[in-house]
Length: 251
Ligand SMILES: NC(=O)c1ccc[n+]([C@@H]2O[C@H](COP(=O)([O-])OP(=O)(O)OC[C@H]3O[C@@H](n4cnc5c(N)ncnc54)[C@H](OP(=O)(O)O)[C@@H]3O)[C@@H](O)[C@H]2O)c1
Image 1: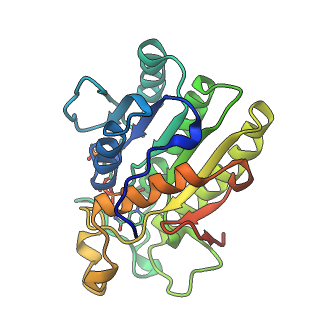
Image 2 (image 1 turned 60 degrees about the vertical axis):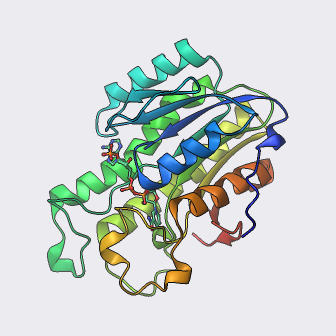
């Protein structure tokens, strides 16, 4: 990994960006790296927990389990920012007080399963539903959804984590399907699912035991890798699941 930050110059113009999950480990790093780029005009940072706004970053509430909050956030973004060229969905749910990833079938819980689907799959689908209309019909645009390698069905040799895996497989399918529809509106549009690599955040904390230090990214490293991919991709990559190093992962 090199240390020079990408500048997103492939968009060929200054752009507005939306980051969903801007209060999270990876989302915060993405937001602050975008804020440091000359090619980024404004950032609409959406989160459930408030974060600080600056002259470039405007925070607004969003709860992915409430479609009305997504609709309001999109209306707000349209009024304040106008066109949006880049949307990054960096939110996600693996565990919380009520929910742990399942090790066995007997641990599957209907309500927790539904929450994982709501936050990890339906939420991103609703984000694209409400924000895609704000994206221009020409020029490079990118919707990047932070997914996870464990959502790959053909790459699953370990089992477990039923709800999280299923919700990430679902969001991968949403990305693929959206890429087909959005290409009809803008042939330069890119819709991607990204695997950030195992990253040191609250989400991965309880599961870092077996991960070698050298394989655990800081949020800044993972944000840097994914922003480089956003800069490198073109319409030919739309609909793919890409890993942090730009390699394509199988669905
Ligand atoms: N860390 C890893 O090793 C790793 C590996 C593979 C994939 N990923 C993926 O990377 C993405 C970012 O994860 P992270 O590691 O940065 O985790 P994180 O620090 O726990 O951040 C998760 C973010 O999701 C937001 N979120 C959760 N439920 C929400 C809801 N109902 N409405 C709005 N926002 C909600 C959280 O918001 P609040 O804090 O405001 O509630 C937080 O900003 C996730 O999609 C995750 O699955 C992470």
